[in-house]
Image 1 (tube, one colour):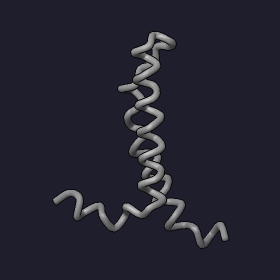
Image 2 (cartoon, rainbow, N blue to C red):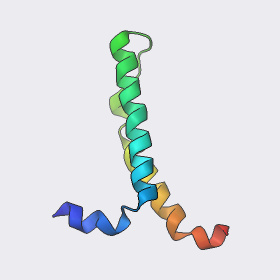
Image 3 (cartoon, rainbow, N blue to C red):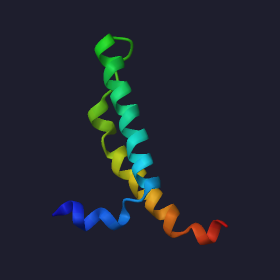
Image 4 (cartoon, rainbow, N blue to C red):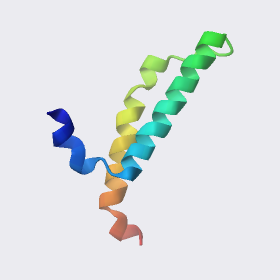
Length: 66
């Protein structure tokens, strides 16, 4: 039911932003597991929502840019 509510906002650009942000978080988890660096990945989880909100905002305001 929640997927139907947010589906109008999930354009290919927003999905790409979610995917890239999630990929970076997964990479950070891998670096933590290797012991290369210590990143607090849980503190970075809001970045997924921020990236999606920025992508939606840029799509809605694209007429101002072009």
